[in-house]
Picture 1 (cartoon, one colour):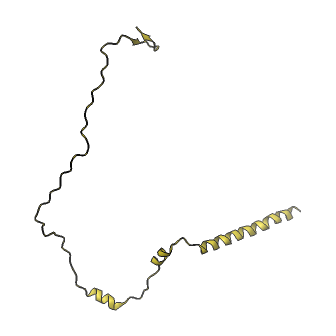
Picture 2 (tube, rainbow, N blue to C red; picture 1 turned 90 degrees about the vertical axis):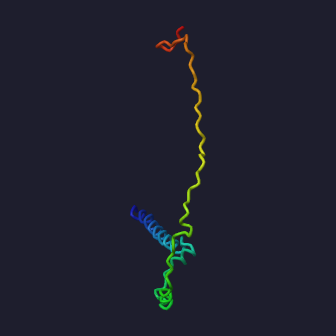
Picture 3 (spheres, rainbow, N blue to C red; picture 1 turned 180 degrees about the horizontal axis):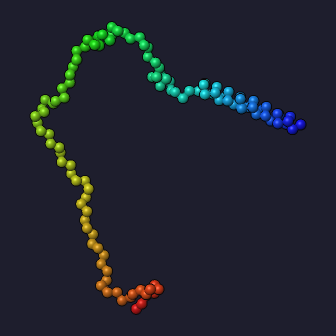
Length: 112
């Protein structure tokens, strides 16, 4: 009787776990986290190239850029930046009275 009870619990549990795995895999296959635009961007390109177009590109004249300005002889000086932080001003220090009549004892009481 005990063995029959264990089988009554074990068999439905195994079936439930198998169905859970199958539906999880099916759900992951049906839903995609890749957007449509990204999917079109990562699609593979065709390995067949138009050789005539590549030959035309190779036959183009090379243009070398000149990185000098026409007025390169003029000296450029930077504009001075004004100081944005204010100058600190010293504040007067508080002064203590010259003599105090009360003094503290070691126990914390004031002595006259």
